[in-house]
Image (tube, rainbow, N blue to C red; front, side, top):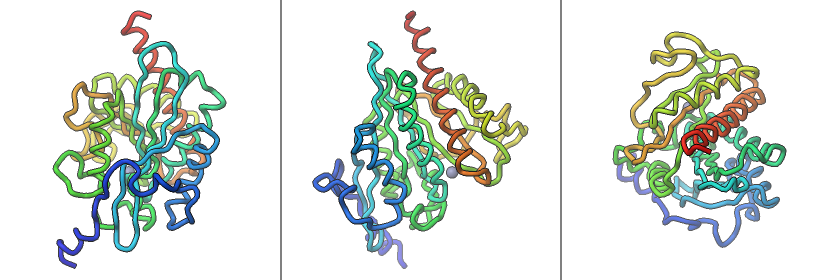
Length: 285
Ligand SMILES: [Zn+2]
């Protein structure tokens, strides 16, 4: 297939709600495997735990796909709302992150104090064609997590970059699963506090899965499971100022999914609590 022919099959549709705003996806017949991941999120929307939105959609072959946003709002704590973006399944064969996000949503009902002052933007399925195909890459054969902020025309990247630029997040967290690691670890970028957030996150997750304390992980120097280098083109805030904190949290893919989910939720909860504590100190509360 020529490049032009491939391009013509992937058309970014216009933004907010173009695909399904008029008819909620929860009421549509299940068209493809993506609904398996999304179904619990639609359920949480129906019970008022989450609000749904759309980044827009694109066409891939004979299928239409959409990237969804689910917003989890904590109660106000009297301060300015803190917006975090949490992204999962940019690698299509790592849906553990989506499972962690629905579990985080459930936790908001059991432990609402953790979520006070936050507006969490959850993106459970950033690579829907890869998920459907059971592949790391998108159906176009691309590792989407190497395409950010380099004028990529990959529709998923275009939609996610537009969203990240518009939302002005205080922090960006990406969830991944690594089939070459024996333990949890993470990458930090962006604001310098990222490291101060990842370390307690790893500690909080360690009761579920041990930290990978190898001096080199995934080819990068690491200390206590923290890597401060990283690949170019990963899902991030790019050059947006002020820079949000940026954390990539990795679970070992061979561990039982349930433990990966528990580790991720523990890490996310720790980040929420630690970041709030940092803001309190910064503002002299
Ligand atoms: Zn990954």
